[in-house]
Length: 217
Ligand code: G3P
Image 1 (cartoon, rainbow, N blue to C red):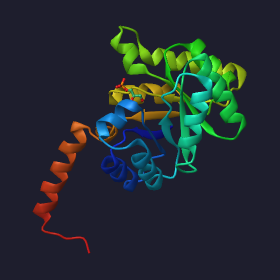
Image 2 (cartoon, helix red, strand yellow):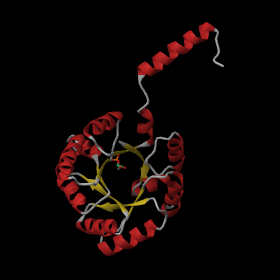
Image 3 (tube, rainbow, N blue to C red):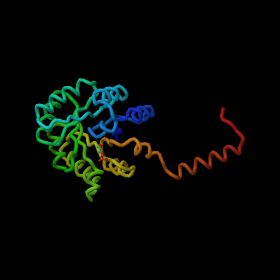
Image 4 (cartoon, protein in one colour):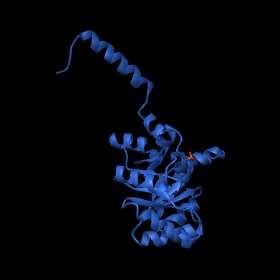
């Protein structure tokens, strides 16, 4: 499973990229707002840090304007992936952009039928938002399982990008189901390494090592 980081914070992106853990980045208008930066400037900087796809979201709603914004965003860098709304105009743009060889990410997916439409429109990625479904009292991870089943039934190439991930348990569960990608907030991504028994074990090993009085090398 690929790891994307879900942020427009370049400090976090650099840190995770330096660890060798990043396969890409996703942003959205709320994350751009949180960064306090200009979308063109910050997206260009992010594209220079990571080699993989960097999703940048259009904000237009009608086809012609979506295509115009997609063109502007595409010029930022070769690794831009155009993030599109899950609407009829967004799907039409998805078909046109993917036919033109661009990477696309269809976002705000909350149903298997929406994911089916995105795959038929040739999307590179479909982004089901699992945390927001959990917020409504559903099990968001079940949607990932449904989409996996449907895409496998028909051999769709669209990659399932599990989004709105809030916890390490979300990451484990979508990996078990076979999501292709998880886009994870920086803090949750770093939390994946944590286990109390790892900390306890290390503490014991270091204490015993000190008692040996030895040094390696
Ligand atoms: O990847 C989509 C993500 O940014 C939304 O997450 O936590 O706002 O639902 P959240």
